[in-house]
Image (tube, rainbow, N blue to C red):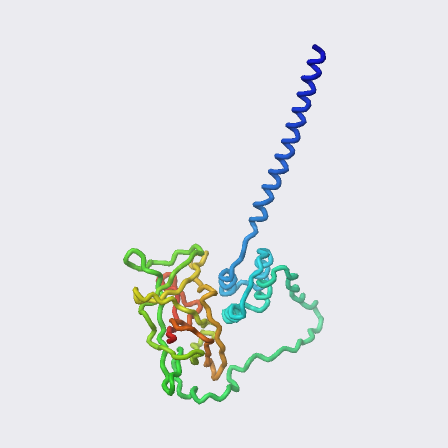
Length: 301
């Protein structure tokens, strides 16, 4: 009887040990599994988010901090870098997009104490808006109103400005652009632009209005839908209510811009394939009136 009890006690002891080991393993497994979502919580950042923050006027240090926190390096082609620069993204931000593990930017220099004499730091003078400009015989022939002009032989053609509307839904257009950060398709009526260029690179002239900057104009490609006799441009909708949509970075083409007069630029495109294109005006969207933006359209044969 005594031997039977000892055997039972041994069995209970072994069972207790097994239960304890199982509980410890379960706790460790639970701890490891709970650690995984924390790592997955790390948010990624997209080029469209960066462009949106730059256009919204966010501080460069804040944008860099978000890029470093995301820890998601991007591979950018030279064309993509040029396109980002043309949209106002600084070289510092591009540097951290390529390598978010770089050390944070140096903090700003603290203000000098009262009574201290500030030592002026030599800086490069800003470009003179009044010139001198390179000689260009076409400048004197260009129309005076702001706009985009194309030189076709000896003729100067005015490139039409068009509004981009949301994709038709249910027989009509959206009454407003709903935010949410998703894809929005913009529609440009007509199968082709009136102005058609031959071989590219193509040469245009851009005369700015008083409240515009040359960086506000970006060259984008349009998707021609032949059956519907329209052209389309894809946007990223703003995540904020009332925010303006932004064009996708992969639809942007680099251009070379040279000032040839006050608020007047000679713009040369790169090599373009056959298709439809537009000089899109950044910030021209009017969500309240269901307008995704405006721009100057042309085609390449």
